Length: 220
Ligand SMILES: [Zn+2]
Image (cartoon, rainbow, N blue to C red):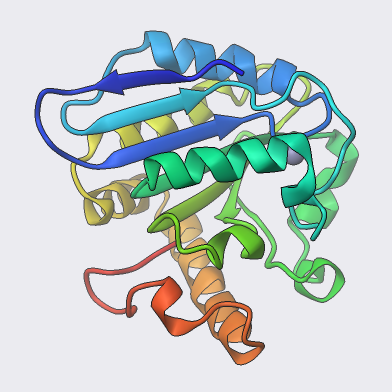
């Protein structure tokens, strides 16, 4: 597992970007995330990039209770505990046939998590898996899915990651994303807030695991 740490001399946010969380998706995320590492360092704070958490392993869904027991799940938890990032972004890839279920409103009933929202070119975003949210080890968690096949989504993913790298605060990151993708980002935030209420009502996430919501503290 390669870990790249890019630091600015100026204090600021810690951003952790992890690709390839299970199965063979690492080959795809590695290609784009290595490019992102070469693209430059943040203007403030720290950027930690793990282009591929695993080299190819059994596929255990990150939504599964079992995921954090796997080798890569444990490595991920170790990274989160070590860096305690302000922002945590995980990057997956999906097979074409999974698009429908990932973006379907029925996903909450079927998988226990809200649907993902498409930014453009097949790049989907949503919040972090509930088990990770409940650790309280990061403030803003974003899950990104790109198509495993083709490279049309590479530039969209890179543009998204540059926003995460180049803005100085979480609010600026969300505002910037909202300026580029107003409808999509608003929908993703709305889905997330409703989901947090749902998790709280089930006792999966307790209130202190995330800051109070409202102006200035929106989370995804
Ligand atoms: Zn995945």
